[in-house]
Length: 294
Image (cartoon, rainbow, N blue to C red; front, side, top):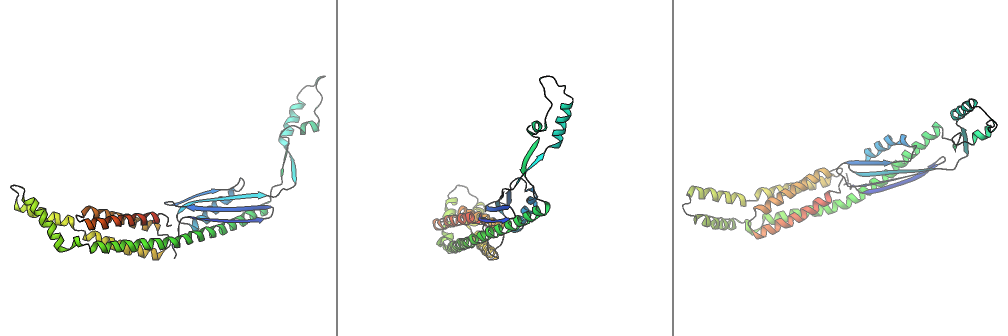
């Protein structure tokens, strides 16, 4: 399965009956699936189905989906607000007339605000259902475009991440072969450390032996190098596996960082420290790119 990025864009548009519509959907990095859906008033029935369709295609990413819809101009219908008109007539019937008042006329009542509403005729249920189905199909087309864009960027990311893993492995091998890790170099450093300790007055020989063991243990980066190599193998396996592996690769990036920090902290050799710093740079670049992986 190919690697997917979390960044992409998709668009689809169409026409059904008197309606023209367009979907735009875009996504960026996020720890989980954060979905925001916007639709015009009157399209609330699409909300649940649209969210389910998006969640079925995406695992991670901050996703924003927007539906725009416009209806062709239709013949205007006039609707009498019967309850309001009846209420006015009843009130007027109870109002006494005098020389300054004339009986209310129908045209006068109709002219009052709210008695007559003007608007377009609503769609019937079948037309509305057909419209919603077409728009959901259009969302699927927009999602196809989004997923294709995420897949294309994921392919580019896979190349970059592979290069970072290659470099981490190279530096791990360089640390393994660092002259400062040679037995004779370790013995020389240990001898100097013991000489310094031996200069302390009244130092217990048993304590000197313990301190020598601690110095040797602290300077040993064997475990860190083994774990770095194992993490590189795991990262390469995830890269080949593809799919939604971003969370696991992010965890490996943290583990890479932890081991490189420990290596630098333990190192008492200039060359090994320089390699450790280069490792930290490569691992940070690896971690930044992993943040884009689904």
